[in-house]
Amino acid sequence: MKKAVIIFSGGQDSTTCLYWARNHFDEIEAITFNYGQKHSIELECSKQICKKNNIKQTIIDISFLNTIVESALISNGNVNKLNSKGLPDSFVPNRNQLFITLAHSYAQKIGAESLITGTCETDFSGYPDCRRIFIDSIEIASNLGSQSNIQILTPLMYLNKAETFELADSLGYLDEIINESHTCYNGDREHLHEWGFGCDNCPACDLRKKGFYEFKNLYNENN
Image (cartoon, rainbow, N blue to C red; front, side, top):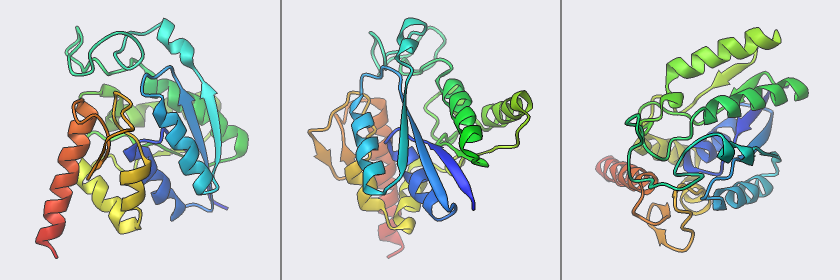
């Protein structure tokens, strides 16, 4: 039996990965992290999606992260600006490293041979921990440090947002992605657009909206 753990936030990318994983694994478990994110509505979205799809979800509280890092996603700041390193102020230092380390431990516990994450370097928004080189490096280090052989799968690594929408559509879950996943950094769950819920004024919304209309234009050209 093929078993995988998916790092699942309830966002567009991880939700697309979840539906992708259903076609590739016999059993999936989701691990979700509460890291004190201001857009905590995504946690509620992740719960609803897991419940709907009968997927076991484990939620880990790592909200202590707020005490040791600076990021507009978990403390004061403007998600539309850059930090002192020239990275988006929404970047949370070492977040993906911590997610993967903890999820890798959980995968060992339940006997899963694969770990799935929605990281993507094509539309990586300036986040250095979404690059292929980072994923390859932490996979090697994690397995060396635990004498294991768990592969880290990144189905979206070389897809842009338009192609991610296309993948969801090909899987038959485009409506679920639009209506059930959450991306907006400002946690806006009141305004529903053609591309999904959001404030329409943060980098996450801009990227999602741009990708949706690129996907829609491509779809219209081919039909």
